Image 1 (cartoon, rainbow, N blue to C red):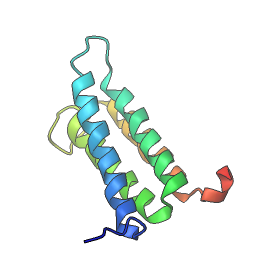
Image 2 (cartoon, helix red, strand yellow):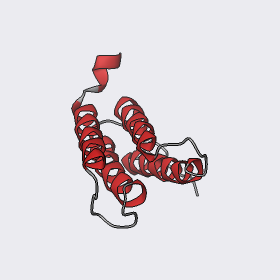
Image 3 (tube, helix red, strand yellow):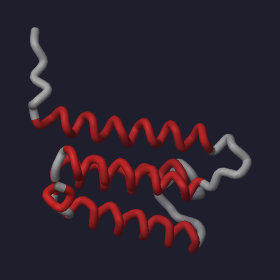
Length: 112
C-alpha cells in the first residue's frame, strides 16, 4: 500500500500535529520557574505562520482556531475550562486570536 503524501488531508494532519507538539512542549516548559504560559502563544503563532507558508488557507484557518481553543483550555487560568479569569489573559487571548486570523488570510505568495 502506497501513501499519497500529496493528498490535501496530509496538510491538515501535519498542521494539527504541530499544535499538539506545541501544546505538549508548552506544558513541559511550564515546569521551568521563569516560564510564562503566555509565551506559548508565540509558539502557536509560529505554527500558524509555518502553516500559512506551506499548507495554504484551509489548514491554516483550522489550526488557527484549534490553537486559540488549545491556548484557552490548557494555558489560561482556570485551566481545563473555556473561561478566562483575568484581564491580562483576555488581552493575551485576543492578541493570539487576531494575529493567527490575520496570518491565516495572508496569501502564500507574499513570501515568495
